[in-house]
Image 1 (tube, one colour):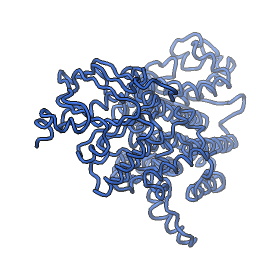
Image 2: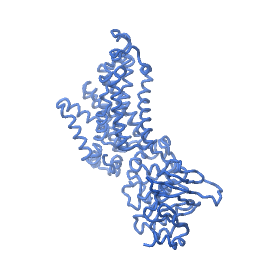
Image 3: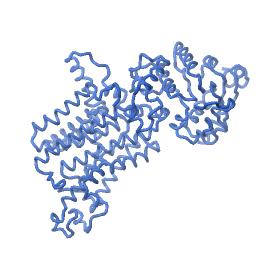
Image 4: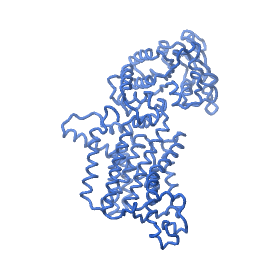
Length: 379
Length: 251
């Protein structure tokens, strides 16, 4: 760790304690299993938001294709679960027993080669990290080494999201098509559907989320974290200080992809299915909106953004389904125009000073996230 | 570091350098040579290609033809960050510092260690780094501003900070593009003093319009006009060259 600098400053420590208390104690004690499972679903997006903080908030690389990586992680997990649910015994009414049901419906008579390794859980876990990681590495290398950046990069990632959706929908026999992979049942023989399993999975997810927060915070505090900020400001100056800017961008993009993929895998486990509707353009843009609403330069802010926007989505969709997309649009406009640093910016400007006064200590000059965000209006 | 090098060997040898943008030759068959520990100033009217020459040397612009040799290494084939690592530092015309980072962090990023992705993840802020940052901060008059965010600095202070960021790289060739432009009179004096201190043990290539300043620091002056050399030599000689008076100094 870096000498003379604590892992969390005071305001981040508050954020950490509040989030830990809410996720580990308050929500599990106050919500029924159905609602807790919904929170678990919201938290899968918090992983994506965390990645976007590193890549977009710090590195200034806007990716409108995080759904791709969320999807790749989710599909890797779902393939393993689907294979386990498709044992010969469970599928004996099919014309070819032992393969996933959607393959049978599409007249496929043997398990395709790329599905074979997903019998192994170890391989699946590695695939959840490395498949999206390598894909991001390829896209990142192709784009950043050629100095494609900014809006062009955002558009290309969006195109990739569209292409992957079309591919998944089109290759119905191999991917389950538009319906996705449904009817996922057990993980190594352990049923993931009953209430007690949902609770365990929720806690596993929260622990993973805090692990990822730790990794992101570690990266932020190293010199690499400062180079990301520097790159966002003055790319040329970083280049002429002897750094290969492309390599740092690739790293940030790959980390964001891996975080998103972990979220996707947890989604498949908690929600029990995976479909192309979580891969395409709309979900990818929603992911950017959660991050912007929470505050793209604040790790905890972005996580709250993911939780609160998705909570609002569920509540609004339950009562006024037609209003949701309009509200989301309005929210995005409000973030861009009125509070570019998101909820964390509002917190730092209005709430934190009061807390400081309350404790009657000398207010510290620099809340990191705030000063980092000051010079950077939303793009 | 080169030990016991030949005095006649040039640090930087630019020969036959040409760059054309859509047929317009911004730099046309340019050749000049810089020796070790020499301070060279490039002057010339607007559009003479001064900044383009620096862009070519530091790799920001790729040459159409010609060669740039630095200590015998061909720079035209290298990437920007590799050129920096060979020992060429460049200051831009408008101050380009990292405004969202503190003065300390700005200088620390320029410290020549841990420049790869992995290296920067494992980089430690040890005593050596701290001492070096403090030394340089003192030199650039910003010692009491180490924890100030760079966006709170004045224009002149940002210029000094960028010069400091180059100093900490310890380049063998330092290229400065209008280092005193936009500075107040007192800042100008301080900058001249600063430059006179930092040019020891390295060569410096400066673009400047302020003739008083040029006279103060230059060993040799190169006058550019339309991408070519109009005159070259000591300040006295160049100042009295009728061609130079006509296109540049005469107005």
